[in-house]
Image (tube, rainbow, N blue to C red; front, top):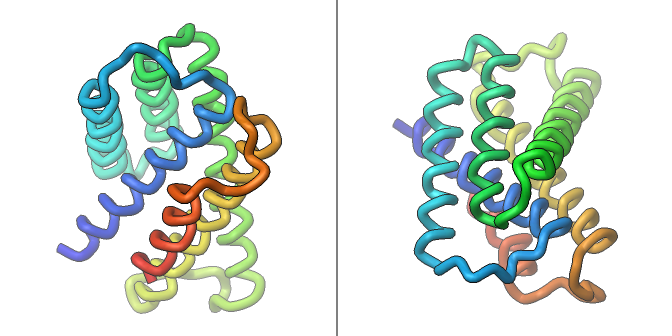
Length: 171
């Protein structure tokens, strides 16, 4: 039961990070109503969740499902072209995979016994996932600061709240 809740929380955090990533490059001041945007984000969470559990043994298919669903939903969320949305979705998934790989490799080299994170080390595996998502979030905040459409001299209150709340919540 804990695994399902933990997975859902991680996926919700990834979708929030995806929205922030897309906001770095796209104008989010469309005429869409707030409930429509919320429904699109909940739909993306549901698709990620279903793809994650049904395609867990096939990484390539899972990534393709994540890229396609992100591209389609963010196309409607930000009202951009499908090609532009697909490029950003590929970049976002690539960033997540790179950070996950680096964190896992670092864990394998420093902490874990021969890089094995099994059921015996469930807490270690969860901490690796949390650490990976925090690093991903920091990278996305830096990307938003560098490429964002608005002035980001200082993090907004909402970003500080996300930055402080999510790591503490997961730990």
